Length: 529
Image (tube, rainbow, N blue to C red; front, side):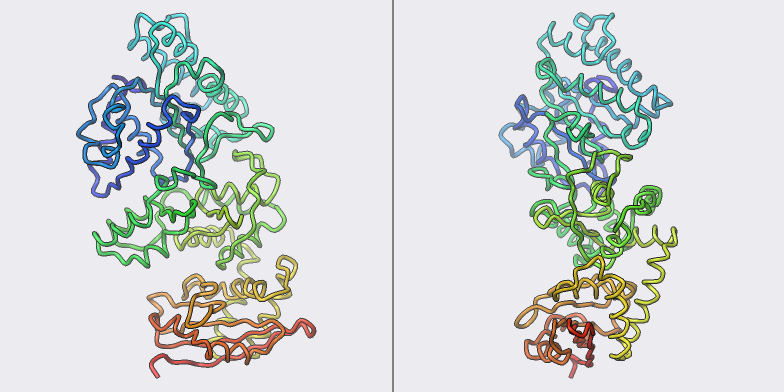
């Protein structure tokens, strides 16, 4: 039993000792299934605070010969799997935390030599008759032990991308580390000495000339988590159960921390949800972890359309995203798409694989973007917010003429980035125009189901602003604003907001393509009448 070779289970015990522990041992059923197959090499990337290290500790505790973990896993989900005891504590495990090794080595340049020196030394102590003294390469050492004993290994690497992220401009260090990984996991010999490999970090495996540096790995990412989606973060069922146990408002938890779409799963940030359950404060728990330093250099890159795309997403819109060109590092950016793809991997955006769009997932991340932009003092956003505040006030004052005039200005400002030719495009512009409403209102809901149809845009006041009216907006293309108001009434759209507030403003907005003019009609409606 060592630090790297056949470690004990104490790190995972810490997680089990915690007040909030959500059982993610079902992941082990998948790793057991792919053991000693062509799918035994796994890279599972996810954002910080999404339980990467806990998962690595769990796999170590389950597989390592250096401990007895039966009592840890008995009664948990994996214990129901038929292979539970067959694989439990049956393997020689090598666990490497690259971030820890970098700190211990005291420099990035010494990290790879530190890993090879210390892991091979522990292997000599564990296999004294099979580990030659003259062998200093870790891959060669594993091959030699396998040749002498037939033993194979489970290799678990936490923070695998530490050097890729933190040493973004240090090509020598990155090449040295990638070469170590290739020695461990590429080629015929590696399959002889590896049962299973599990790498976890934030980034997918780095591409070299558009190809993965380790293209024999199955990758599970925030773009496509496949079968591992339920184990990336907390699922909606798990969050529902926690809300019931701790007496938290699920709808508010969902608004603040939901939004990561992984296939059919809605995934929540585990750190944020656990903190909310413990302390009861709805806030951004990312703001305590250096978020500004991560996001500012990215959102200030000078790519056409980047700032506008971020403004659109702040307003609740989704933007089209091509994820194919990103090189999976922190320096190779050729377009807006590359920047936005990295923000997906970092957890600041979520990606809808079906529609190929990205958007800000929830209120926590929206507040992080807003804080970062305020710190940078974006002129574009400052001007937009001032104009948007005037629009909201004119709406609340039922000043239809001013509302129409301000929407005209937004139309002119954003017509170059939104093809203004249908009601959906008009809806996008209005979402941006009402960005200033976000202080008092929840993220606008597009096509909220109502009595007989769908309202185009609905703004519901936040709990602390329930004295303000809900805004129910119907849009018309080449028709009158009065027609929009009639549709709201005839189809009983107000039923969509009757559980939220007793005051509603019905807002009809139309656009006449020939005249290039907007019309606005606003009526007050009370559900208490």
